Image (tube, rainbow, N blue to C red; front, side, top):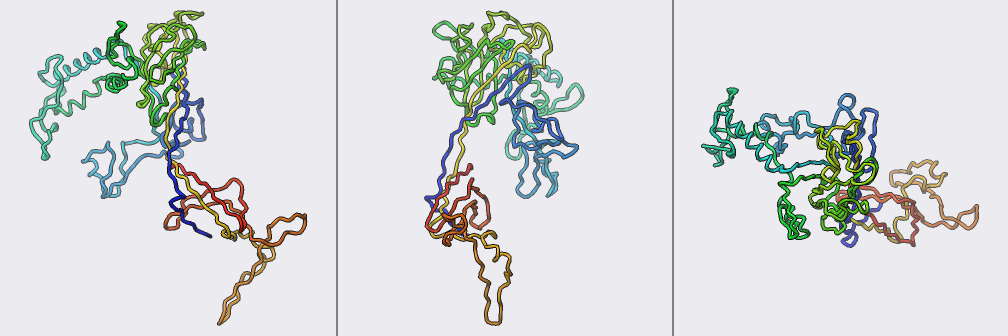
Length: 479
């Protein structure tokens, strides 16, 4: 077997830019990703192990269940590296013995899944959340015999410091709860943080304003010269979040397309025709709101923010039809504020009725951006080399069936001469042409510096190699 070393001119590394297409269909709180239906297996009702409309990270636990096959779970072994999970505290880590397996969370297991989500923020949502948080903090203060007045912010307090000089929230500012439990300010904060609410739209304020050079519609709060004013803390907002696992480094500009259907009829379609993040309603032609900006897109961050509140269904048999979009029993007119209702937002499946949400369906399409590092390798087959094969069929039948024993004596060692098969084709049907060294290259192996096989490339059709021919094979590897 011949070994050849790659030279500096035989290895090249570049990036390949790809734009994979993604499509989501939403109907009655059910999501379909890229037209993939649910697949049942031998051990589970869902082969990927995640609901339809989700993607599985690492694609582990395929067609597995706890009873028959067990589930793959993340773990580390305690050793001298002190590596552990973020969910494991220092004291908990040191309670393990060396060699013990540390699970991230008790019962944690794969698969980890991701899907698009929708959040609806009603009118004056920011002020409502702030008022609710003040009420929670005030009640917490009363329960712990504190003296915080309504509206006073809750702060972590500490009268002592740790050995490193940091505030020691676990050793001070203790108050007794009405249930008799003494809690520090840190324990109190952990207790109430799940009751506090915040706006994900508000968290995007700086990011949205950063793109205001592209369009005035990216102003989080502004008054335009036309007299139109907008404040995303006040206006109703429909926020759609797309995890980066679906689009890579960024959503490709100009590829977002949202379609809104009512009883199977298209009542609204928006696109980013200018490729600047403005989502403009383009269909149906002549429809209500046609040509208006219904929202904005944050391509790098994977967010779609819809603010278009006009009635999309003003003509046809379902004109001004109202549906129970909020699941409160109060029907609302169809607008972009209710696009993709039921997309992992807690909205349950709706039944039959005149105002059922099952009358509406939605489609979202976009392309992602992935930059894949690619290594290109050139493997050369020089003239006059690679002219012998170790394949047993390279020997003639008579030689292969004869005795291979070598001749040995006290003064010599001689192996028998073995005849090889002449595979050179002839112009005639029976005899072969004059013998010539000829082989067929079917595979190319890649080895590391210690000659360990790390990869094999197989050609689609074996290539005939004679002594007077040379070849260069181009190998590409995604890294």
